[in-house]
Amino acid sequence: MTRPESGSLTAEAYAQIRAEILACRLAPGHKLVIADLCQEFEFSLGAVREALARLTSEGLVVSEPRKGFRVAPITEEELRDITRVRATIESLCLESAIRNGDLKWETNIVATQFELSKLSLQDPADPARVSDIWAQAHKRFHEALVSACDSPWLLRLRELLFMQSERYRRVSVPLDRTKRDLASEHREIADAAVNRDVEAATAAIRKHLEKTTRILIESEVVKAREG
Image (cartoon, rainbow, N blue to C red; front, side, top):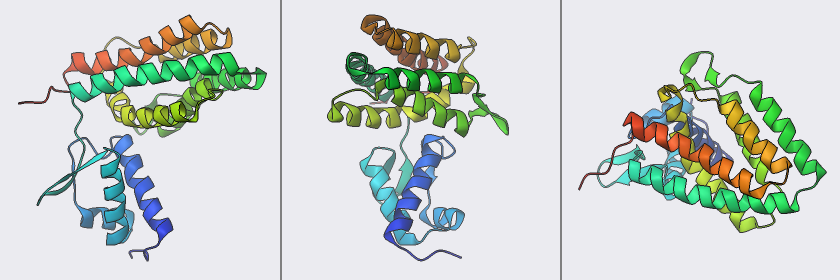
């Protein structure tokens, strides 16, 4: 039975559909039929409509006149743009955090990096997908790195870019034919940050982000927009 609509249920509908999109369980380009979403997630028509409107404003969903809603596609142009801007913002946040971080900041980086290194990247039920547990730990690690940044606006921009790049990162996992060593990449970033080496840390984070972009472009999963 569909649950009664409320502000909290609208927020739940938004969070649930957003999570499905970021995890690519709702694939890029997938048509979003409101009635099907209501039935699958047991939310009211109004809650789902409001959730889709919010996701449209965030760029995760596109609204097509007379056609309804669709998960935003992934394209090479957008991927390159997101990577370029994210690398810049992430580097600025990390530089600020290195200059302002204390012992607690260092400890949190070491702890989250260690936790991440002990988790399996693949979902045991579907090895072609990223484990949600790993993805949550990955998010905590990257947040720990920049948590001492003293600019709230840089952190807000960083969070938006992290969210936008999440779909691309998830799609890249089954495509990597080079046996990417993510644990080593994360350790390199963490070590440089804790050692207060701004140049090495920002270079490592840029290399880390650009590697995902290269995997996707070489796989030709993301295509250039036509016309």
